[in-house]
Image (cartoon, rainbow, N blue to C red; front, side, top):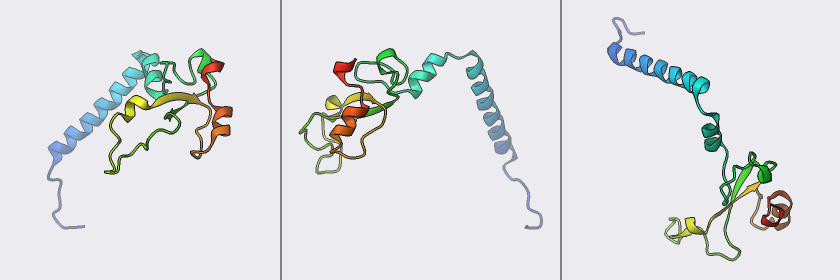
Length: 119
């Protein structure tokens, strides 16, 4: 290496190491004393009825969330490349075992998605 090279930011390095240690301590404290239901709400998705996918009774076997649009709806993206205005109001979250691999996966979706009539 270079002769005479030395650490020029020792104070910043020390502050960084202390911050990393504090984050680790907070993570351990949260794991021990935290509310696991809050973490579960963060990790698991919810359907349009507010049920936790893979957790709540009727959707316990459907752990993934798939966002759907009404049949024959306008494209999600506007010509400008931005999300179409109002699209978030049209999205419907559905708990599913496996997300469809294509837009024409009607039979796949019927077999793997928790349908309203089944719940």
